[in-house]
Amino acid sequence: MKKPIIGITGAYVKHNSYMEGVYVHHDYHRCVAAHGGIPIVLPFVSPELSLETLPLCQGIILSGGEDVDPRYYGQDPHQQLGATVRERDEAEIAIAKYAIEKGIPLLAICRGIQILNVALGGTLIQDIPSQVHGAMQHTQVIDRSLDSHWVTVDPASRLYEIVGEKRIRVNSLHHQAIDSLGQGLRVVAAASDGIIEAVEHTDASAFLLGLQWHPESMAVSDPCMQRIFTRLIQEAAGL
Image 1 (tube, rainbow, N blue to C red):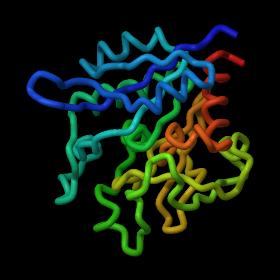
Image 2 (image 1 turned 90 degrees about the vertical axis):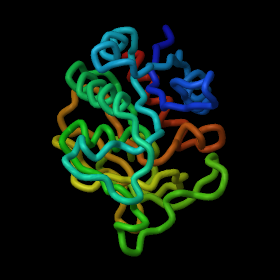
Image 3 (image 1 turned 180 degrees about the horizontal axis):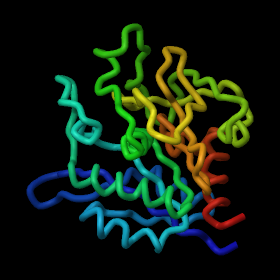
Image 4 (image 1 turned 45 degrees about the vertical axis):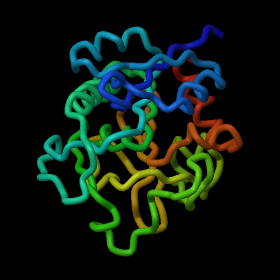
């Protein structure tokens, strides 16, 4: 099997005045490589240039990172809104729409599921602790490779077909989440407090899965998370 190229969007990081730019946590590219793909980083120079890089890719991962600017879903910023990067938001909204239109396999992780939802006209909870009464802890204080809470999976979903379990343990590194669903998305997993944990697209011609947790950081030891990346690589390879 020819190894498919998986484009991974990057976050912004600044170490100092001389070191700043696009950053991708090594768990992403290690996980893609371990499951038979070739990872490349997609910088967010502009939406137009971002789209020009996509014909190089047989699959796409929208990675985690900064908060999504609420301007893109018609809201003002909440007091607890974190850092945003407008250039990244605009590039990833364009990437998500392009992937759906062209049928490119897409895995949207953490921030990725949020930007996917916004790209399709949905909105976000800007800060779970202050906006969702009775919410559990969604920003875990243990290592990101460890599981934090339970998620219930819809047995009629592609996600269930992949993981084979109605309840799975996931890690949790977010304070934003989906509020109103974007067009064409359906909820396929949720936490016990009602926070949406996974979505699929009802009309997309290719593989499309959005996850609120970070499977790339659990895949070293968790078979369920490994199967998610195995499926992504298979879909990208046309198997």
